[in-house]
Image 1: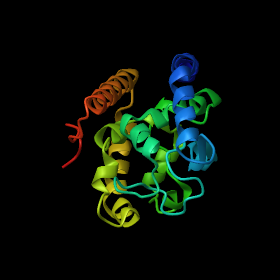
Image 2 (image 1 turned 120 degrees about the horizontal axis):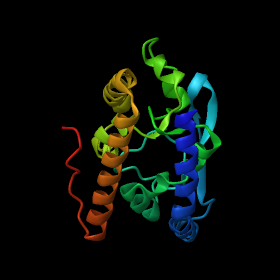
Image 3 (image 1 turned 90 degrees about the vertical axis):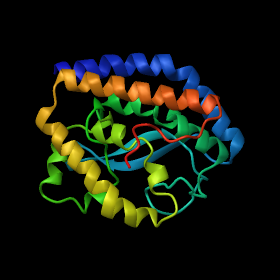
Length: 211
């Protein structure tokens, strides 16, 4: 109950504080390409219940393809690349937190097609609310660059997803308010670093990007 109270309070405050940024970004999305400003896609949450995750749309409307995105994905729009690089596209997930679909910190929710591949051990992650950020989010902040130049879905399923799920299973064993606070601070620092780098025109790799 305490965790949920913190999620609700911070989520509501975050929605209010980021609403001007989200509104400006939504307008940019609409002006850049035809289609809705927001994207709602299926994810699997606590108790294996499916819900719709909220993001700013970063791809061409109606574009087909894998549920993961590589750095060279042609489906991503010009504005979409900026939003992904700065992680602004993720801000609407605060609404998922307020609704109770997600928590501020926890395992990242996966698309149903990938959850079907989970082992019994990995399905332990579905006993808690998924998070906007978590250990895998921090470690794979530049995941799209890792998937560049390959079949993104094959590489994701065979290499990236098992590593992410292992990190998140480790998180379940040591989760605490202090751990969550550290993850939130680390995430905020990485996102701000990326945003400043983008404003300076930098395109270097994040220091946290796995080798």
